[in-house]
Image: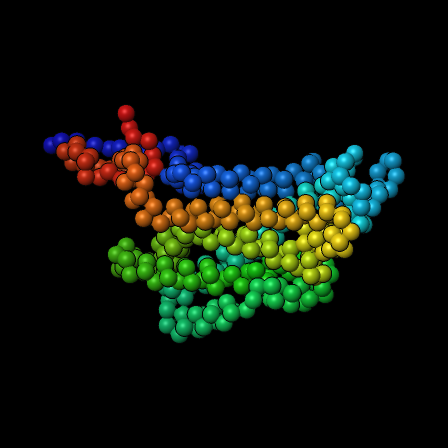
Length: 343
């Protein structure tokens, strides 16, 4: 009796989600993914190390030499100039990254948690509960995000708010609007998975409903969530900036927020003072561009047609992560998983 041939798995780094997609990407798509990752990582690092990178505080109006001048042009001790209120533009832009990151985290975490919970329950249990949740999700999805954000900001903070009030207002509005997206994706996967053989086997051996939902359905229904999360993160930044631009955002002495700074720079544009608006606006555009490029690239790489095209263009054909083939033949189990061929 011949021994089975076992092919070992690739390295740990090759199995990480984003790095694995990066190895699978080719040409222009790889370039888009790299640019998106660079911008996104720079945004996260800027937000984390804002207290170190920012030359001044987000609400600081003076230093040891006296008060800052209003609308000073870029140069000297203010590399990007100052605003009409006397704030340092560079410091406000750097601190604004921290505010945007907090809004993304709160909005996405709440949306993912509630959307997954309702989707698994609705898809697996079905019945009248499924019909009710589907109707509610469709009704909520019809509301415009910005309108719901404005209403939430007024209810939560009265229109003007501190750091956590403003972030909570945008986070709640985005959560309510984007729950239907996660709900639909997870529900569709749960409906498909509950008819699989391994789920039926778990029922036969007496496994509880809760254990089946958590161990079998939930673990196999969340593979496409990273694609939705990256796209919703950019929407969270837009919503927070829109609230600040319309006057429902965070007060300047509570936190730095790019939308608020854009709102205060409207009158400066007509006077030829460009630096108070161009840098906060550029920050919004770059962050949204970076996150969107990552999301779109991951979405394209999840399409099987792309992997087929890559194989047709001469990509290396590699063996499966783990293959056990009696007789020692591996010809029938080759796949294109982006790993290096064995020597």
